[in-house]
Structure formats: structure tokens, C-alpha cells
Image 1 (cartoon, one colour):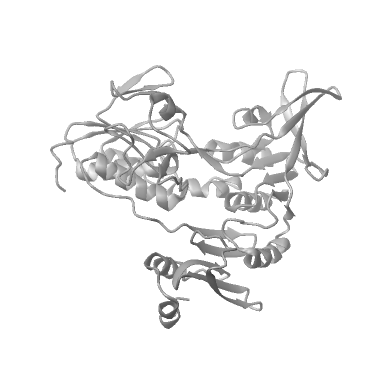
Image 2 (cartoon, helix red, strand yellow):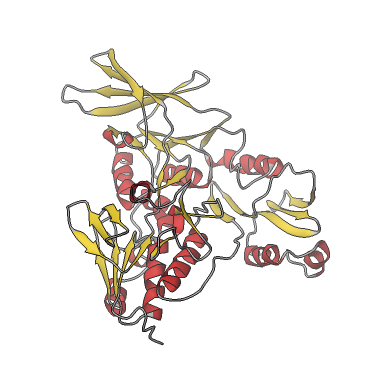
Length: 426
């Protein structure tokens, strides 16, 4: 291990201990053995696998399958954890960060890895008290937590609340037929609940599957016991308020007029980058915190990575991108010179009795695509390749996803039709 004299004894402060922040800390330590590294998080626990949260709805996962590192790792790496500390102000000129309880921490290099929050659409709320409607307002990303029975999965504490609520519930509705919504629905079903999924689009996984693949997936999903309501959305959330002011979910009315009584309403309709603290500090933002390929913001010595970062006008919001960005931000903050490479978006889904792999970001309706597909109904296998100007740009696998890594590499290389079929990628 080599020591970078430029960063020795400097203070590196990382806001956010998700995968991006975690990998940034590790990369700093590789490049600067003697620097002070502090990683702060509003959550009270060390870095965990956020992609595993839906699995926690049925029961908590063992520590070795949930946390990204043991406590000993932080001691060995000499990384200080500042847990249950939410940053509320950044002073780029004075190089300090103020936390919610008033404490201030100085830094020489700052990495913002605060991630994202779940978007809650502005659905109408109808509040019933003593059998009379007392209020009609809007649900949003701030107030939904005030109503028992309405949830969105973003932190481990969310799964704890839902798991306890599920023990005394019968019916759950999930808004959103994307990857995370279906994972949550599947795990709620395994908790013994009657589950419905409401998806605005007329097909499931609209970002990952084309029309043909979506039809095949729905045939499989229909046999899972989960009700799939497509081409519809939430109109009104019905809740009751008792004499003590406690508000509790009772049902959901859809745009088509149908009323679904339910105990649990789970929103999974997308994320938004947590940029408020950056905006207030004068750091340049749009959909996320704007960074260049080195993860640098418009302020010297301030970096951003993960779900909060916007690269070339795009917020990736994926686990692989967060890991890569974290490494690059950490390495460059410690004096390195790495750049974020173009990434192929990919998804793996295992639920509702289906296995799906989807890679590439394309318009499935693009007339310029050359498409090759194969389906074996008896074995439940489906493969589809998408070529653009004789380069493999996307792929869908269903049933057998064992060759997903080979396919990803072929897309990254831009293999031609001849190369794909000659090398028998699939």
C-alpha cells in the first residue's frame, strides 16, 4: 500500500453510508493510510444491502447476509462511523458540515452520498371521522408516514414497521409494477397477505420488458396468486381519524372507480435524489447533484456519488453504478485520477415464480432495431436480443438467466450479430 502525501492527515467526510459512501471510504483508505475518514448517516445502523430490503418483510435477514461489512472492518480500516447524524447544512467556504443536533464537523474533502428518497405521488386523502368527511388533502413524500398503513420501502426501519403491521393485516396493495414493487408484493404474499399490484402502464416491468416479454411474464405472474391491475392508478386514499387524532388507512379508490379495502398501502413508483442540502449550499444541481466523470461538483474538494449524483444529465439510481461512483469519488478525493465509464443498465428479478434478466437501455419501439427471439413454452424459456447498427444493445432473458454475465459483456463490447451467434453467447 502506498501513501499519498497530499492526503495524509487530512479529514475526509462522507455524508451517507449507502453503497456509494461505503466504497468511497474503502477507496480513500487504500490511497491514504493515515487520513481521518468519517462516514455519517441519518440511519442508526452501519452500511447494509439495500437491495435486500424487500426480503426483510417476511423476517429479518442474518447479519452476514444483510450488512456489507462487520464492525471489525471499520476498526481495521480506522473509519469513524457517525450514525444517527443527519447533515442539515454544508458550508463550502468554511469547509464544515452542520448536523441536525447542532454539531459541526470540519473537512478537507467532502463526499456527498446521501442517496435518494422514494417519490410519493400527490394522491387525494379523504379523512373520515365519526362517519363524516373532515378533511380532503394530498398525500406526499413528507406526510405519508403520519398515516398507519401507508408505507414505502427505503430504509431498514420501513421494513420493521411493515413486518409488524403485516402480522395484524389481511390485505395489501402495492402501487407500482416495477422491479421493487413486484419484489415487495411477492414478499408480502409470502407473509400470508392477499396482495394486489396497481400499475399505471398496461404491462409489468415497463422499463425492462418489451410488449411480447411483458405478456409472457404476466402469464407467469397471474399464477402467483397476486392480483395484477394494469393501466390504472390511485385516485383517493381513504383513512379514518380517531378521537386522539390517530389516522389509519382503510382503503384505496382507483381511477376506474373501484374501491379496494386494505390494511397496507405500499408505494413503489420511483426515486428522487436528495439534493436539498446541496441546493442550499449553492452546489449545482438539476435532477441530482451535477458531477463530471471524476465525480467532482462545481466546488473544489466536494464530490458526489451514488443515487444523489447526476452524470451527463442522467441519474443512474442503480446498485452497480453506486459502487462504481463511490470508488471513483473516493479514489479521486484521495488524489487519484479515475473517470466514470459508460455503464450498461441491467436488472435481475426473481419472484412471482419467474426469473428475469434485462440489460440495455433502449426504446423497444425503435424501428431501427434488429430483433431475434426464442421461446420454449414447455421449459418456460424466453430469450430476446436487440441489435442496433449490427451491435448488440439489449437483451431479455426469462427462465434461464445463467448467461447474464456473458450477455452483459457482449453488450458492453458492442458485439455484432456474427460474433454473438458464432460465439454462442446464449
